[in-house]
Length: 68
Image (spheres, rainbow, N blue to C red):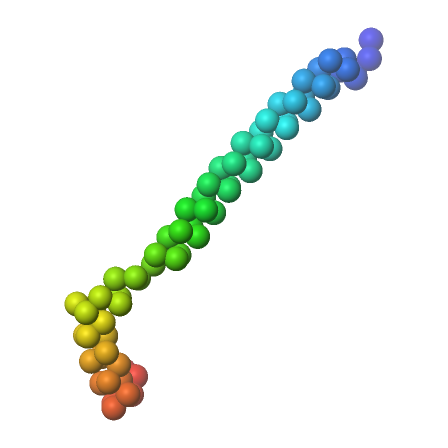
């Protein structure tokens, strides 16, 4: 009796591995797409007057007095 699995078993293992690799790729791709979108939108609110004006004031203070 051989320790080698049947060709059928080896083929099935290949198919399962292929499905696994595709699924991992899909999940990583979805995660990276989401991360890219979040990066593009990150801190866009900083351009709104409610945040931009105080940031400008803070930068003026830093320019005058230096970093804390």
